[in-house]
Length: 260
Image 1 (tube, rainbow, N blue to C red):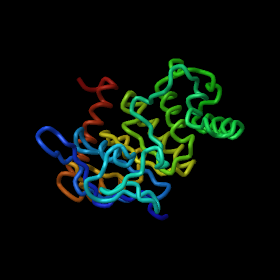
Image 2: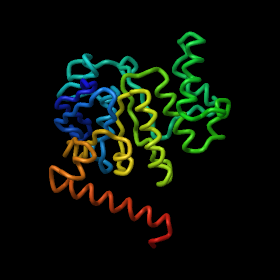
Image 3: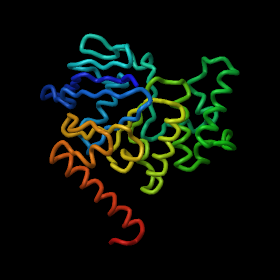
């Protein structure tokens, strides 16, 4: 499959009273159409800034960012976020409390013809496993159901690329991994290309075809889950993968009452 998303030596910096602070440094990656990528790393490593740059919320200091044949960002030019054909699912879901499930999903389709909009919403309600819940409001749903509504809403306008910013962080450990598999199944059924940002290795390995382990604004290794586990490119990557796996095991044991 051809690459849909390409980041070519991009750098992002923030201006502060003390001068320019580099956050993302000469970073490159490519993601095939229909694949799910993940930026994995600790807080402050730059992963969310990369996501914001793809969405069009952060300008590039160097490099280029392309979606298919379309140049979205460079130091000289930038396509506005609303014209990028990129969908985004936020960390807190950002559902409208006064709208029901169907209305939330169809929110971005207000300019579509009525029948087409109705058909698309019905299709996504079914795809997200929300049959029978179309008239319910966000406060009447579980965390997992709210997450699926947010995903369906992001997919509704048929974006070329979907961005997911820590989408499972508000859920308990057991629910996170189960929903990660559910989200992967939905994205694979629809054929969407997606980029996920997370600090949780279990989520990354459950959902992604390609994972970029980030360190201090750079990608230490961009590889398959198998490649990261069996062929780490550096001591940092090997230690990070082992440390995160151990922390996840301890968290699971704690929840089962097997550890103090």
